[in-house]
Image: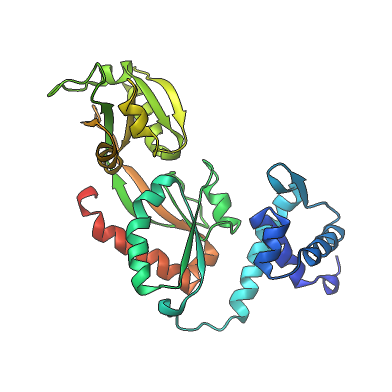
Length: 308
């Protein structure tokens, strides 16, 4: 490949398409017409002798070739940006940037109320977008630039990812007041816990895995009756059924405020569910991103003392 024929803007088109997986959104991201982006995609395909992105029901999906070159292209673009952008002192009061935060509904539930109150005062023009991340894809979303940073309980330690502990949570069990099991002052044993039917919340990540590990160590296994992605519907299901759910303490408290529920401590010693904020190399040299990350860490440190 002759580098004199490579237009740096084509690499920006590749990056935008990889992040957005949609021609229209990629064009908006770059501030160009959709027809111009389509023309650039054609040139990209000729340059790499590959389709790179193909249409599917999920959008413009990267080919095997695109996946293999993505990290090199984005790292190259970030290096160029770092080299040519003159650092300026960051003023949050004038920032109009939109930050994309990856995480589950629990992450949003935990950080957004306090964070929004803080930003309305300190960075009133800044905007946020919460983007859900499928299980086990956090690193791909960060390294691919699809989020600026993420909040996750996944136990991951890749070399190119930075992280800080945000908070840790004890687990609790929520039971409907009309559940045949529930009686005032009745203890929940691990054996009885395993005998009851459960709601499994996929967005909890490591929390559900730790529960099953404790049961396995005690030669027990629970029956999962219902699997849901979001915890938001759980209190209403538990209230109106004989199902139980295992959630973090703060979620249990919130659930008991929404519905007629009772909270039981988890009936065995179990490791706290730890949540980290994670970011990549590009965010690590980004003043605005670091300011927001540090602000979230500080906010959680101030509001989370009872849960630490």
